[in-house]
Image 1 (cartoon, rainbow, N blue to C red):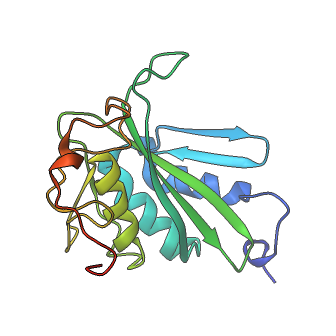
Image 2 (spheres, rainbow, N blue to C red; image 1 turned 60 degrees about the vertical axis):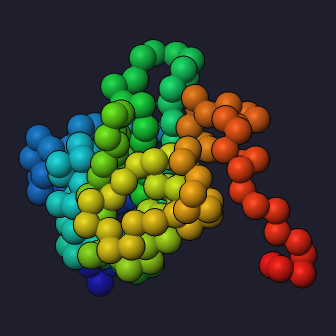
Length: 179
């Protein structure tokens, strides 16, 4: 049995990270470790290359989670990007997992869709779009999934007021019988 198929107590085998850096060249922005977490930061232009390599060459067959974060006004050192999208990948053969992150900025935060690799990304990408306004180029069904279609804002953005901007009060009331 080769070392790439043996389960590991680390979240990612060192060989996986070395091969990813080798495959992408200078495309990997940075790799960070915190306790047992490994976070790989990749520029948007290399996102699909990194994901395809991890899935096809390293066996990360499952996209466990895809979510967004708005860092507007976040304390600490200034950030290069306002938004980050994180992808949690899992290799069940080696028990490896890692978090791949990609940053985007206003006015048009856009990343490539990973649905060509994981069909399950469909609803996760739609949720990130619905809550943060981050679009995914190549997504086949880019519409709201949680908020009404008429809703014009993105409620998880840090600049969205807690009480809204009045847009919620314009929707017709639906009784329990109508729902």
